[in-house]
Image (tube, rainbow, N blue to C red):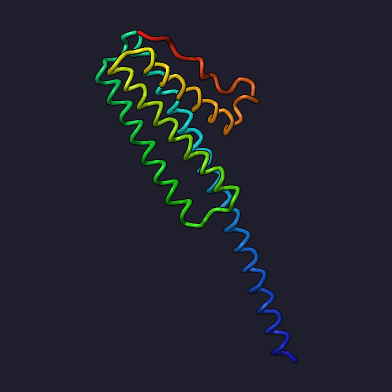
Length: 170
């Protein structure tokens, strides 16, 4: 009888530790995913702002043409790297469906930002209304997705960058 009580107690303690450890792992996973989402959202927002700032600086001759192109190429390349990283995480099976949906949106948005940077490079190299319109349309599409993902349209005082926030053409 004593052995049964000791075994019951041992299994009970082990079981409680296993439940606590599982809960602790879930809290850690939730915190990691929340941090990933926050960092990813901030990166997309800041990339959007940076591309727009280089557009505006180029238009008013504050930025050298080659420097602007080099910075934009770096941003475009970073978006490719980010997209590949998201693909790896999505393929791992680590995420729940709701987390995967958000990560797919972040991946799509990184593609829109890549397009925005690439179209701005096209405009800088071959200044035309058509190339500027392609850039501006990509910018609007990227902003709409960023604002929706981050809830910027609903929060007063947040999201001072906007899709209309860039200077015109040269």
